[in-house]
Amino acid sequence: MRLNRIYCDGPLKADAILPLSSAGAYHVARVLRMRAGAPLVVFDGSGMDYPAEITEVDGDKVTVRLRNPTPGTGESPLRITLVQGISRGERMDWTLQKATELGVAAIAPVLTARSVVRLDEKQAAKKQTHWHAIAIGACEQCGRSRIPAVSTPISLRDYFSTVRKDGMRLVLSPSAPGSLAGIASLPSKVELLIGPEGGLDDDEITAAQKAGFMPVRLGPRVLRTETAAVVAMTVLQALWGDLQ
Image (cartoon, rainbow, N blue to C red; front, side, top):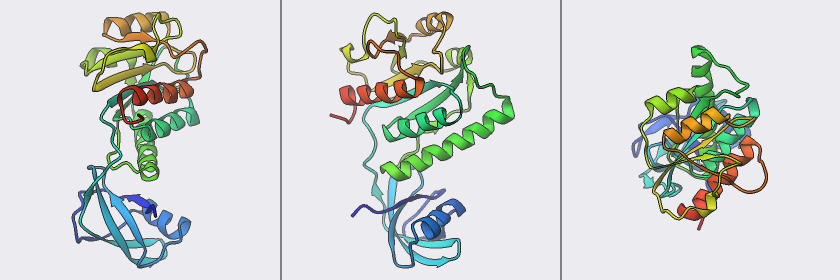
């Protein structure tokens, strides 16, 4: 039987008795309607799972006792960083949720020329917190024990100038000469750049190539930004990751 999984801000240790966060406690007590004595798994994002038992449920307060941890098993051998042009509202939320389920290691939200969303410093910090929470929820659902890092949103130009190349760099472009599935290399790290609604403009594609990103296409059809992210990551995981 698959046990319910709850994130708890760590660090955690075996034999500890601790309260769940308000969000975790609400989910356990009000949504799942679990009671004292019920088993679950608690994790703090470090890569370890802690089998646990509920010791007390008091309204919206839930206390658990942790047992000896075991290594999580949900991480892909392929480290993917998704450099995602920020899209609007639920589209971006959905993209981050599915990317987490598909094993992304890190997510770098970027503002591009065609991004409809515009963020000041305060809004960017608020969005980062919101997206981090989405990643946590996706990890609880899909069985991952490491939470993908979600960066503070920056401009694509700043990303090119401040982030060092780390593995193979790919950018999705409908006009690229070669397909993503046709790449013959066997990388262990990939940076995947995807534009927002409307895609990346010609200047951004050129700048991406100068920064070491190789243009690739997914097929003969132009996909929505949230669809492109899911399809591209699925292809990468099927070729070089853990969907084999």
